[in-house]
Length: 171
Image (cartoon, rainbow, N blue to C red; front, side, top):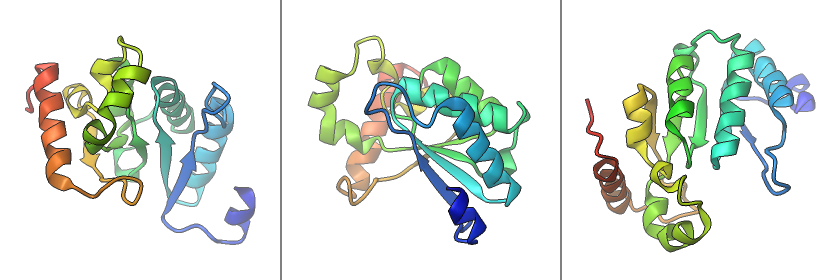
């Protein structure tokens, strides 16, 4: 990470993937906050890949520490996926000016696996842009191609179904 910075290898967007293979998101909150501070120091944008509710909480807490709790909507930082984003985390994202780049098409592609693997109490937050929108957070959609099929119509359909299921309507 630091070596890329020293070599001037960064472009305007730096992606950090939170690894949850061992149960806890890595890097941890403080290490991630340090990385985010470094990214801000060179005026780049940070893109943190966070999928689970735990990873989303860690990413938002790290952004809060890196930003000093001050909103920075013009800096263009984002959380990729925010796949399971509870309302409290969505509200923190909105307060900090973070954007969630979501992939609602995953509901179509992986719905059966999600129903089996995602705890029932987290399923209402799964790839649900309405939760973020209701909190005032910015939301963008992506296909995540080539990991998934770039099928915008099914992704839009899944997003609309998630809005309807949450009984939350756009403003």
